[in-house]
Amino acid sequence: MNNPSSICLSCGLCCDGTVIGFVELDREELPAMRQLLDLEEVDGNRVFLQPCKNYCEGCQIYSKRPKQCASFKCGLLKSLEQKELNFDAAIEMIRELKQKKSALEEKLALLDLDLHSQSFHFKIEELKRFLQKEKSKSTLKQKHLELLSELQQFDKLLLKNMGMAPLLAQE
Image 1 (cartoon, helix red, strand yellow):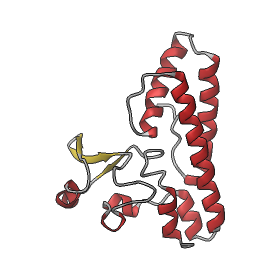
Image 2 (spheres, helix red, strand yellow; image 1 turned 180 degrees about the horizontal axis):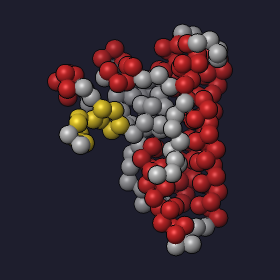
Image 3 (cartoon, one colour; image 1 turned 90 degrees about the vertical axis):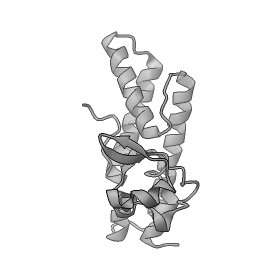
Image 4 (cartoon, one colour; image 1 turned 120 degrees about the vertical axis):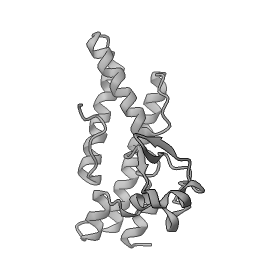
């Protein structure tokens, strides 16, 4: 289990909707994917939204997963493959990211905001719009500022270790 590809099965932060909000499918893979995934149309393209219903403590369709899923390599996986990072350090980083995400989700729940998205990625997009609106009305509260600070720290970890674009990137 100490090989680079097994790190994906240990992680799942792209599949569970943490760092990726959707996966676009190629036209030729649509027939097979229709049976495995709930597809939606966005801008004329077929996609499935994260979290993937086939991810539960590991990918249930790993050998049949979409091309975009199979070709995706986060910074952590690349570092492991290039031997810049060992397997145990990668597992520790995944554990840390999951713990921080869980803590952020708990704080989000306590704020009792009306966020509709299932995916963490899109929840943060909703939160960003809410915070921008509150900031423009000058009604940001201390608990919002604290959450924003923690999200920015989480963003830095994602960027540094996963090579992912910040969730809170300004538009």
